[in-house]
Structures are given as structure tokens and as C-alpha cells.
Image (cartoon, rainbow, N blue to C red; front, side, top):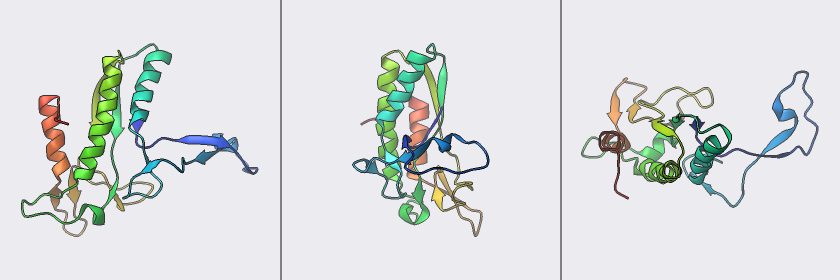
Length: 170
């Protein structure tokens, strides 16, 4: 399962005229105007309870098959992450805080019997995206496009500790 943002739909307000079929013929995206949004990414809602909902859906509607969260990540602009500090690390603690919120919800579902056996966070290093080229960053390391240097981020160290110990302090 991959998860980044919730996707809500509503009935179309106008005809969607295409010469080929796509499910979007029947619906439009709906963004909850009262939602909580990532200040570093336009219109990306933050909804940690959606991870719980996904886990419970797999448990209740798909025979509680073994599954894992194959992609989850928090996008930030390179400018929002700032420059490396004196310790040589980029401070992307905003990302860590949000990831904790999501993992708490996943753990709640696991405690209730969901058969999730792992999490793979997107991604090791900032990479090119079909949607936004290199504008949004997700990695544990920043890729300096001019030099090719890899600059570590604090969140990557946090995730390493999480992977090593299997827990985090709230």
C-alpha cells in the first residue's frame, strides 16, 4: 500500500468530455477546506488517521492479508528544509513529527489486529518525480543537483534509530 495524502471525491459538477474512458469521468477531487495542510506543499492535506483507516480496511475487507506500507513520505521544498546546520545536517524535523503521527495511527491498527508487517519510507535520497521534477524533496539525504553531493537530513537519522530499535519516544 502507498499513502501520501487522502483523496476524496465528489460528483462531477460539469461533464467530463473525453474520447477515452477514465474513472475521473464520474467524479472530481474534493479537498476538505477545514483540513490540516502541509505548509511546504500546496493543497496536500495531512491526515494521519487515514493510515489507520487503510489498515482497518485491509483487515476488515481483504481477509487481513499480510501487507506493508510500501511508500509513505512527507514532501518539502528544498528551500523549506533550509541549509545544513553546524552539524552538517539538514533540519527537517517537521517531517519527523508528521511521520510519528502517522506511525502512531498505524500502530493503533496493528494493536487491533491489522496484519501490517512493515513500513518503507519514501525515499533514501531526493529523487526526480513525474509530477514535480526535483521541486519537492522526500529523501533521507538531499541531493545537491549542481554537485551530486548527498547531504544528510536529521529525519534520516531518526528513521535509522526507529528501524534499529523498533520504537521512538513521543
